[in-house]
Length: 521
Image (cartoon, rainbow, N blue to C red; front, side, top):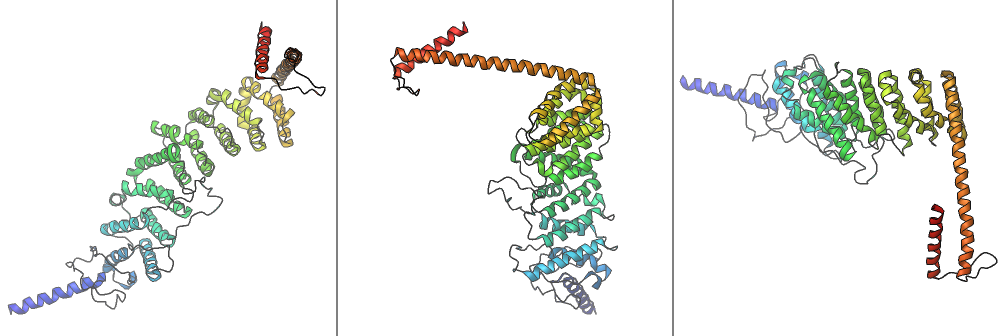
């Protein structure tokens, strides 16, 4: 009787192990798992409660697994783990003809995992969450290919002009990113549990991927990182500091990064949520990172996002307007007219949010630069500078400080009228003069009188200079004849003369020098 009990227990245990092995795809195939192949060398783990999924051993082949609806609710967590391990397989996507069947199985499995996460019954255990984040990391964290301009020495391309590089594995990566996004935004995701898997290391690797040349990937990364920042309070200081370091490296070392625009978009939302009064840390970020981003050659690629961040700071704290304007003047382009147009557009937005007290601190240096822009031979720069007078707030600031501003810009306006080649600039300049005259006719007339006096004095100085040069030319001609006679140089009727010896040239130099010294006395 005792032997029968022992044998019965052994048979029961064997049946349990056989069922567990078949569930993970390493035992004999069953009717519910037609795609799983046998594996006689697999180590069978002890039977566990079906509610606590067991991590399956590594697999060596990719075979289709049953759908979630084809298994019982108690087995879905274990099936979820099996599907995760299939999705860990890496393929060579540069060769479209290689492993096509296995690639399609993996893609379909990823889609099934995504549907399961999105479904109402898609709540997964802590072990499944950990394994899913590991699978996601295996797929997305990779060495990015070198940028197309790194090997050629060319400037970084403008992403608005062409599509650029497209990731060959995007059909799989897109679903993996969708899976991560759904996990992060899901109301079933407990941040206290998830932060153990989505830790600082995970976030740092996500930030490294922002240098991808594929715009589609950067868009997903932007959305995911923004959601992580909003949901995981513990990561917020780290994310800000890490983005700060990326900007430092871009500004002071490489000046090459594909994701500056996307990172600035994230920061735009972050800055919008800053509490007042603003922390000193945030002000330092503005001065040390955001404003210096203007000096990069490729600023046009991300200027729209950068300008939005700058405006957010000024709107949050109007006292920062002076800091921002002086920063723009510090990095104002000297030879790049397209950058000047961008700077003028940003300057107009900043001035629109500037209060009179901050405006007065920087208006002299500011309008000295605007006067130079008014006289730019590039008509778009001059036009953008003249358009500043179409903004009512800026005109009101000018009106309050017209005693200092009008004398600075009056000369530039008159030069445009007299010398600028573009007729449209002539018309806009006349309109600006009318605005200034209506603002203060007496001051305008006084500036005009002073300008005419300066022009008259300058004309007299120029005439005196021309007369001096003419006298020197006449004296030099007479001395030249005397030197020719002294050294008996033959002078032809047509003005050409024989070549003097080196001694003659030396004597001529001494005579000329003595002539100059006599005139000085």
